[in-house]
Length: 75
Image 1: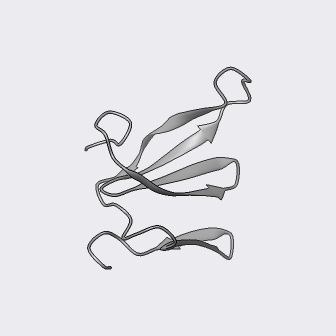
Image 2: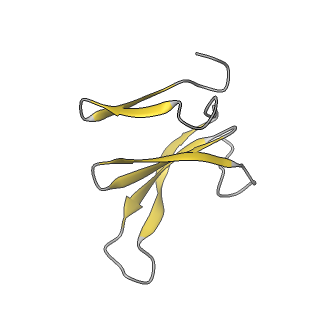
Image 3: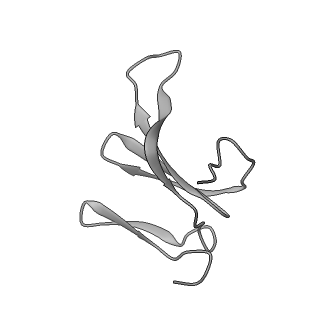
């Protein structure tokens, strides 16, 4: 699995889901959790990354305590 953190990916959008941040890149999507540490407030959630990116900025929306988005493949 490719990770935006490990291999550059242009960030298109960020959404909050609970205490987590979801980072939407052109070719990957990652979840980062709140650590509660002022020096390192967020860290990637292990095993929560997708090898599909976001279509474009504004294509991810919080809906009813969840997230929906249009992928870089238009789906």
